[in-house]
Image (cartoon, rainbow, N blue to C red):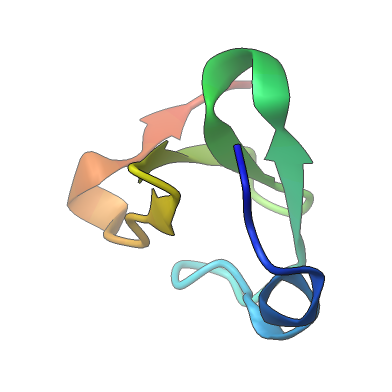
Length: 56
């Protein structure tokens, strides 16, 4: 996954507004707050709650 570090600094979970962290193994961004996992497709984060998967 090739995401701009500056972009990662400003992205937040749309559901709870917590920071997101990169999950290279799943090609996703994981929320540090509510545990939702957002997919990254073609290096573009899909930050739609309907597309997210609960991880915990």
